[in-house]
Length: 225
Length: 225
DNA sequence: TGTCCTATGGTTAGTGC
DNA sequence: CGCACTAACCATAGGAC
Image (tube, rainbow over all chains, first blue to last red; front, side):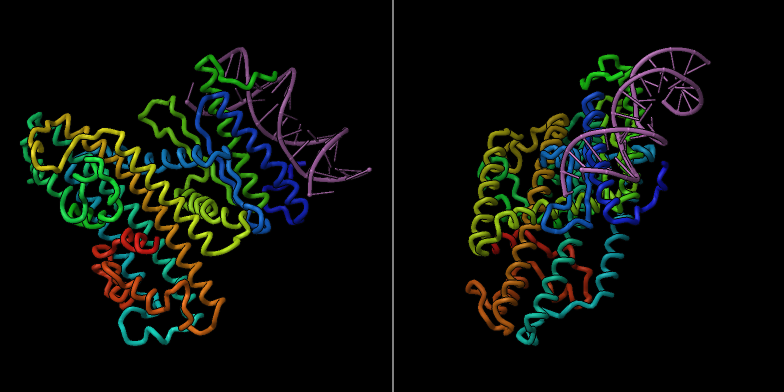
């Protein structure tokens, strides 16, 4: 009957159709995965559903498999861009990337300045905040943390990629470990890795209990860029 | 013709089938999303493909939409468990969560100890690493960073959730902002937020240039748990 | 690789219970 | 709400190009 490809107006019909088509879609995903030996992940969020039920269905149901494919996707996303640009020159590429990151930081900072949050921590009117303001502050804080989280992920993957490029380039240039790369020798790099809070010695020597107390990845990235 | 639901042995037939069924699956995902106004995300990884092409296809193609739904999924995953446990007591819930996090940390640390990395940073044999060893080290580092990244995301979202719970609980108990919550008053919380490297005053007062140099979220989380 | 074609079988909107 | 049914529609394996 070739129903038009737009939102089904009748709510009941829509829910029935959703249920049926969701099953079929999951079945098809399973078939594709089985027949062709590929990893498939399906995430369906039904925001109209009552919030008591879990509004997000996935295939596969196993969260580990979902997480695994999401990681694959993210890794592919961060590593595919350089190849598309024919990888002209490593320094040019890094410069470009640094510019991009700096612009993003600038943009983010400006958008932060525009949004007026509740002023806290300057020591004068902290005690005047009431419960409602506290909640508002919590919400604000939550948003900021999410933004920072995204930012950190980006910086971390950016840093990982750059470090790997540096070291691979280093290997290509010379088999001797003493050859300088971009003005840094191996000692510089290891110093960098061990600088400040980034304690790799404890980490690799098996004493991992203080692992998460000392890590300040942001500082590393700031040194790198 | 009811082909059996198992891997298609013929490679060419498999690729053809994969291509056809992938299109159909994407079409179905699009139809479901349009007809029923739900967010759908499809990730397909074809590992058999040659690595030159991007082996991961998604629907929608827009990475922002993919990222958005992935975030929705992660949020739902972290917040769905308490509701299933009827949210008995907040402190019990937090204790349980703390135990869980600690166990995960322990597990992670143990798995770290088992995998033998190249020993760096102890100052004795750094200079003896050659180019190959450097690359190996870079690869190791990359893996560790990925794990740390995952870990940090988890701790951050965990922290966000707990803080929000605390503040909402605080509002429920009393409209006065001076009521203590779990032995902490409002001043404690703001002190906590402003402690160490977490400089919210600069952040909120618009001087955001040093924003990313000072943040040490891990310390915050360690204080909270 | 992609497209077209076709017979076959699977999917689905609508209906009834 | 879920299940069963059915006619119409669609997906798809296989083949050809």
